[in-house]
Length: 407
Image (cartoon, rainbow, N blue to C red; front, side, top):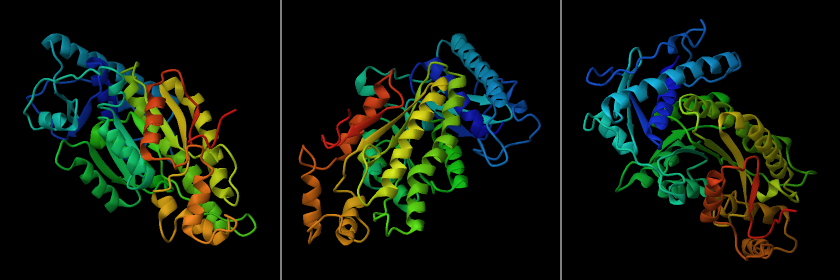
């Protein structure tokens, strides 16, 4: 069993014993000063296949089988009982444990506290039990794809402000790193960054493995990365249609495929723990969009995936929902002077009579009963709603200022 696969199992044991969110950090050294967490099952998990590559939950040659999930359940039960025994013996949870053959693991309510334990500054875990609605995501680990700009950055910032530890994943590696540094500036560590091309399965697989390495597990996946190429069905090149579909539809499948096993693994040792997957969809996933079929088609398909994943993953305590924002006029998707929708729609004649970008913007603002575009805080509130609701999954929540009304 690869240690990146074992890490979320150990985190789950801490979640169960603490009854509160924790960050878990790994150190390859088996620290002799730490209590031992003895597990007999991990080495046999691959059933003779040998050591799996880091983060390899699935590939063209392997599948995440029911037999392996059953074996992981055994390891999860062992980890849960072993950590609880350490807590019972000492009256408190140790902030670090060593697992023979793997290394050492260090827990904290925040990344800084886990790092302090790793440096040997604390021996006992200071548990922070969530107090109420204001702690919906406090201490939880969130992954936001396409998180370096636009809605993704607004979502990542909002989650960090709410107390989550946020991993910003983006194809723009430098931009993701710079944004994570901005979130961490002058205060505690509350963000990290990863490079990912969500259209490439190997890249997504590596991202999923790296999440466990950074913070120990995953509680919230926000699949936000998206693109748009506008144009008439009579004129849009197929390569543009294929590109939009690959990023907006197929990539959602990939990030769920490779990220959900981490959520499942930590639940093996904490059966009460729940996790969330949220696709940032669009109002175009709820109603067709003129001369924008590639985008709308992929978004409609995304809601089909949300509903299907919700039915399948509920068994593992994972809720899957979509948030469908209206137009984010201030973001680069609309306002980029070269590639933004305002200039695309102006050039393709989608807005009759429009002579300027200002004309296009005024046209779209007039469609919204509330008279403005959607903004980051609007989307964040919908995300928090989806997470807080224990009894909703498979939903598509409109955040459109009344432009789209469900019926």
